[in-house]
Image (cartoon, rainbow, N blue to C red):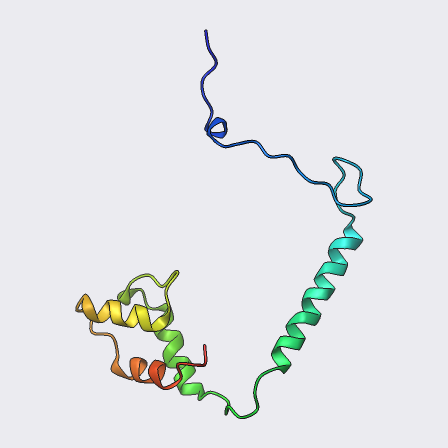
Length: 112
């Protein structure tokens, strides 16, 4: 009797490449993971400090309005599309999304 096919049979097998200095089958040390986390934190700090000073800080009321729009399921799912695409989709479906949201998104198009 032949063995039943498995879902993994349809994918090609690939060999894992080993990094230099690591024996086969051995995981990274906890110290390596900690060092990587520290590097990620440093990169985030560098990215945050690169904000251009020419842009004024966003209005808290505008941010609250956008947050409510993001969290509202009334206008459909928001995964994988921009806020403006979601607003336009809701408009096409007749869900009447708030007009000030679209105005704010078009006004601050360069600021995610």
